Length: 92
Image (cartoon, rainbow, N blue to C red):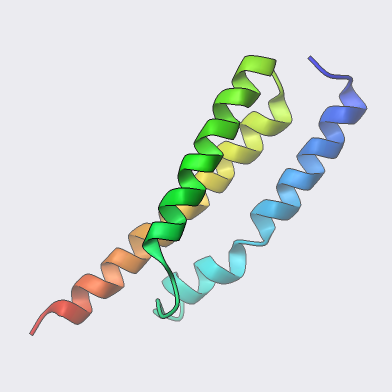
């Protein structure tokens, strides 16, 4: 495992990356707006994050593991919210 200070830098970077998704979560879940959200893009980002998660597990990096799990959770939350909104709009 990397030195503690290296992991701390990784955790800080991961935290900032996670916080960057909060406006999107708010837009979908609080404001109920889903315009401009591309599900294929979110799928690609999810695959990428999943691969980084596997890499983090292989190299035993707690920063990569925690950051990628939490970011994936945010993306799943956004995607579920978008599907919820779009399915309501599709009803007659």
